Length: 141
Ligand SMILES: [Zn+2]
Image (cartoon, rainbow, N blue to C red; front, top):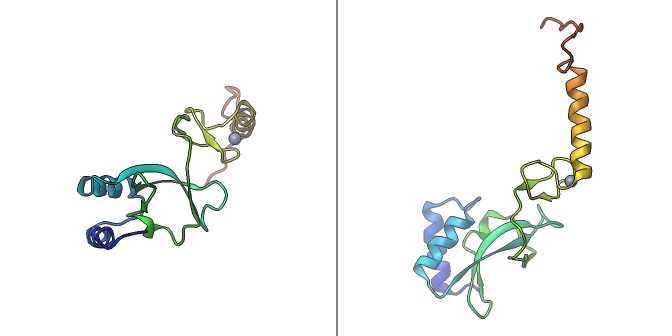
């Protein structure tokens, strides 16, 4: 439940800030003004992210009272769901399957990395980029 003082602050903040992608800045600014609030990093679920959720920050009190200063960036929020804070931080999403990955390979698993390597090596081979004896002619234009 968003009490009036928090909603007033949110309305003022939104007057000079775009809430899209600004959950970190918004929650930092809110806890600076309202120390009774704690920043919480979890996932929101909504129409754009109904299955995996979307990483997001909001504010809570010790008793779980939730205030989300940048909630208006989402068309709707179905739920706020905790993630395991001791889990490793994802570095991105797998280019093969879309799951989170935790290194800089761009793949979530050896199987996805192998699939990506096969795909990109095929493109490189098709373009003749690996062969020093390339006899393919590159068409003009
Ligand atoms: Zn994958």
